[in-house]
Length: 236
Image (cartoon, rainbow, N blue to C red; front, side, top):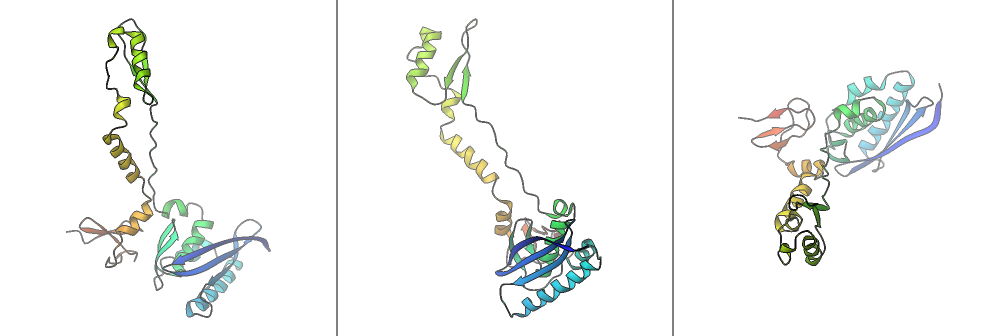
C-alpha cells in the first residue's frame, strides 16, 4: 500500500520547547510515516527527535502496529518535561512521551476517552423570566414581570383586586436583583473554571513524582495525587 497525499500535523510545546509533528497517512487513514522537527535547529534534542521519526516511520512501513510502539515509548521520562498547551496531554514526561501519547490519541480507538483528563461540564440553569402571583380564589393568576416599573405591576394587581392598589409586594422577581443573587452567579462562575488551569495552580515546584508512573503529582489535602494514574502518596 502506498502512502497517500493526506497529512496530519500538530504543534506542541513542552516547558518552552516547541516542536512540530507531521504524519503521512495511507489511503485507509492509518499512519505510514512520521516527521518530527524541533524549533531549535541543530540541537541535540532536535537530532534525536529526527532520528526517532525515521525509526518510527520504518517500523510502521514494516507493519509494526501503532499500539505496540505506543506501549513501548509512552511515559518515557527525561528532560525537557513539564506542562504543555494540549488539554488532553497537560503534562509530558518528555518529548518522546508526548509524541507517542499524541499518536495514540489520534490513531488508536478509545485511547483519548480512557486517558484524557476528565473535565466537568458546566451546568446551565434556565432563568425564569416571569413569576406567577396567586390571586384570590376564583380569579386568574397575575404575572408580574421581574423587570420593568412598579406602576405596571401595581396596575396589574389593581385590575385583580382594587385593595392592593399602592401596596408593594416583595416577589421572587425582586429578590433576584439583590446582593444574594449576585453571589449565586459568582459561585456558578467559579464552579466552571477550566480544570486544566486549576491543575496548573495546584501544581507545586516541590511536588514529588508519582511512584507508579512517574508523573508530577499535585497536592490534595495532606496527600499528593497523581493526575495521570490516580495514585495517592504521602497520606498519613
